[in-house]
Image 1 (tube, rainbow, N blue to C red):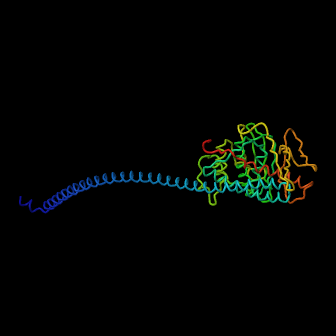
Image 2 (image 1 turned 90 degrees about the vertical axis):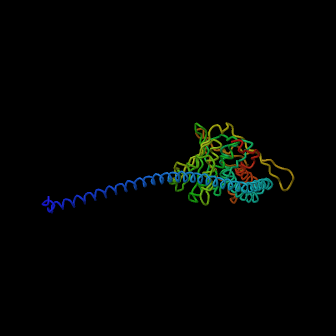
Image 3 (image 1 turned 135 degrees about the horizontal axis):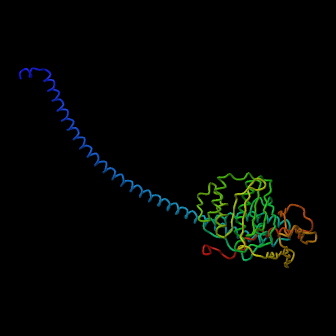
Length: 396
């Protein structure tokens, strides 16, 4: 026994055993502490995850309320802006209509005086442009156009649109249709055509012509506007198509700075009255081809005869009645005696190139004949001024 106690190997093994027991005890204690810490951390993690879920729910609810409140504020601001614009523009539109009515009276009063009539028509032309813009803004803000009492030939509708733009002398009208547009659709189609003509003249070279071709199609008629501009890129074309087919409420604050009302107004009117507008084609001249397709439901079979024009004489109190001009799509001028010249039909169609009269040019015949010709041109620009029947949201 003494020999074993004196054996150094035994003491080494004993020390190693004691160290191993101490290490195992310490590792067990550490493991117990780690498990406890892990349990605490797991509980904390569960609590934090629950709090995070609650925070996410609160954030989602707050974000939804914020979006809803922001949309409501935006709608209120848009409604307030539209109401203000509609009220202001309504006043301006009333003044514009009163001015145009006064000009009509002056044109009839001084219609036999060539110089006076030419000057009045220049002023009338500016007033027509102003009236078109105020009507367009009013429609986009929730107002509606009036309704005419009579139907109008599709040619006169095109002439009316021509008289509402600045560069009207660049527009040429080729008519192959001898039909009339129903009274409720005359003004909206003229408004849309005027917007398309305005775009065509603005975005093409100043000296280039803009053509309107009126053609009969199986489903109605088409008014085709061709210009020689640079055309539109795909992004602009897509936005234009979206505005032309949207038809609902228009966010006027999204129309750019300065705002571009043309396509938005055209889409709203086309959707409301039931015709179609497109600008996705290329014209034969490399520019844009815009097409207004009017269905048969908005057309009538017979072309109405234009109303007689009464000219007041300054040298006496007797009024002289000028005979109505024959259907505009068949007339290309007048003889020296005042009779209308007609173009021959070719294959059953009539093709007319209409040019606005030039008041400064020397005309053959008397000043009375010149006044009559000027009156015939002015007749097309006055189509939208006798809208006595109001057409509001109740007719939507």
